Image 1 (tube, rainbow, N blue to C red):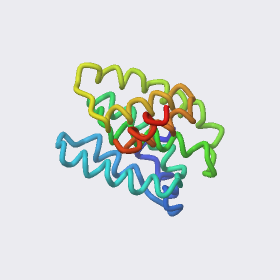
Image 2 (cartoon, rainbow, N blue to C red):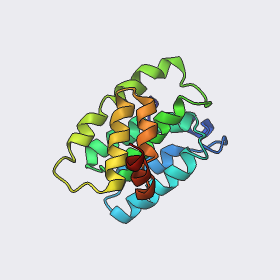
Image 3 (tube, rainbow, N blue to C red):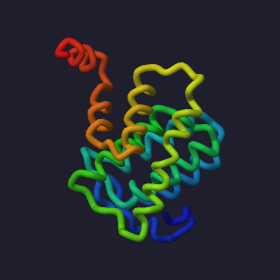
Image 4 (cartoon, helix red, strand yellow):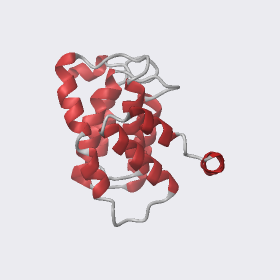
Length: 166
């Protein structure tokens, strides 16, 4: 993937199909130690990199950096894992393709998700984190339909309705 200081970021489109320089937010994420600022940055990235099922090249190029930052800083959260999972799920829909020269490094970064999830095995998992972690794991194993299905259990009522059906 491209480095955060690459000027190409300025040209990449996010979820709104307009240019969004995700490298700025990613560098802020890399530098901060404030949990409040992390939440704000992840909220911005969620908003800009994914919109109503749309993702763009900025979204894909952000994923390896999100995984790297999460590993380096121990930022394993539902928002982080959920965003990565959503981008990977939407990549398989009517969205731009990753340029061929970047596919291998993108997929290699997804292979690091199980290690991320494993690092959270001793923490308490609420519904939101469990959904994000399971969806990200499924996405990392190229089980896109399962990843998408798990993401849909983000509401206790939906989960209860599913369990009543089966």
